[in-house]
Length: 286
Image (spheres, rainbow, N blue to C red):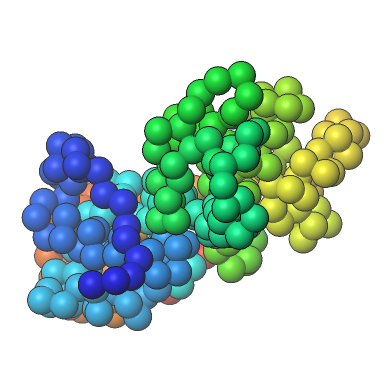
C-alpha cells in the first residue's frame, strides 16, 4: 500500500520504557506513531485516543495513556498528547524532495560540484553512498550531531505551547537554524536555552520569537535585554506525576465516583490523593 512511512528502530523492543508499559502500551504507542505521521507533528488529539485505541475499553485506555506519560513516551499537552522526541526521529524531508526535483529538472547528466549528482539521494528521504571528498559536503548531518539543536527546538516548542500557541512542527529548517546558532555563531546550548526561556517568559518577545530563525535574528538584542531587565514572568512549574495522571484520566472522562478511580486513589498517600482529586474534578490550575 502506498503512502507515508513512519520510522521505528529495530531495537525498540529492548527499550526499557517499552518494556515497562507492557504489550498494550507498546501497541498504543506504535499506533500513535502511525497516526501522528499523517500530520508530521507528533501530536495525538484527545478525540483520536479511542480511534487508535480500538480493542481497548475506556478504563484500559486511561491506564495505558497514563503509563505512556509516566515512562516519558508521551507528554501531556493542551488538547491531547505529544509524542516525545518526535522531531529527533521523524525528520521532515519535504524541502529535500523539492531540491531533488529541481536537480532532476536541470541536471540530466551529472554536473561536477553538484551535491545531488555526487550522491544517490532518493525522494523518500534516504541519502546513500555519498562521495565524501574536499569538493562535496554531506547533504544532511547526522541526527547525533544535530541532537543539541533538536533539543533546543523542542524546548522552544514546549514553551510556545505553554504560552497558548498551536504546537508547531519542528522541521529540518528549524533544526538547521538552531544549529547555526551553535556552530556558526558560537553560542553554547546552555546559553541558547537561557535566551529561549527568557524570551518566552517576556510578554513582548514571546509573541515575536516563534521560530529558531527569528531567535537567531534577534539573539544579540535578546541577550542585551536579559542583562538589563529580568523577564516579568517565571517559567511554568512542571506538572508532577500525580497531576499528569489525573490530567490523562480527566481527558478520557473519568469521574471521582468511578470504581476504578476509587481503587486507584486508595493506593495513594493522602497528599497525592488530594492533588489527584483536585485536578480530576477541576483541571490543572493555570
